[in-house]
Length: 355
Figure 1 (cartoon, one colour):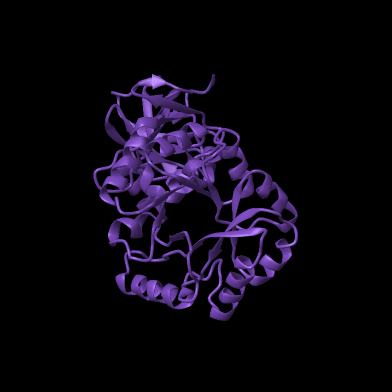
Figure 2 (cartoon, rainbow, N blue to C red):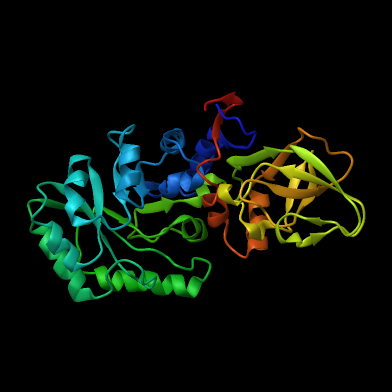
């Protein structure tokens, strides 16, 4: 139940379809990690996770322990890797809930190795991103040796991250760096390196058997389907006379008599002020956002075909997301993840409401 006619439709079957199509295009991996961090890139709900698993992902990845535990409530058996660092005082929670832990440096390993009795870990290698992970071969090998000689810690995987997949030269450099840093690490069950973009751009290197699927699951790839739409409605139409201003600070001034639709969505919902000047869709026609966006409302310049109650597509589809990202000088990820938690999600499967 929601009382403001502003909501996000999530198309569950499209999510499953996308995962299936990606795996068909890249069938030679053994492990497909569904990256479901940031509440499934703003889609929310374990209903989305369920479709990702049904589509073929056999491992999940999150950024935090909080995210892992939310998923574990409904999915007891599927392995979950935390890509971020979990504080050592919470490591017992990971063990109790079968959460796989990332080891990104020797100091961290030393802090947790006497606090666990049976836990799975993946070693993170820094091949150029310079975020998390190790790039010192001696440190990597000491971490490896300490783990394989432990009867409490199971080394399940090793991984790294491509930071500029469209740059083939840099990608090859990272791959070579990974091979060099890990050449003395033997019998690793899972090696994963490529995320969405690299997975689709390059053939699978022989030494890799896992890939991580993130944004691509939500339709940002060839022959894939959009997985959501952000919708609001016209709640009032105002008439502006010539030279009348609109909204906070009066930054917009009418050059002639104009009609302005008021829409109940704003920056508290993730439609930040920089969205001014980009387009929304009403009755399949583009209309421009004008004036300063408010916390809870925004303004759209319309014509006399628009009426109170008309549906407004604030975000229409993935092509629209790309347009918005270009307007905001950002990336598609940020556009999606910015959509606020107070926007209700309606989950649809073949047209049925699953909210």
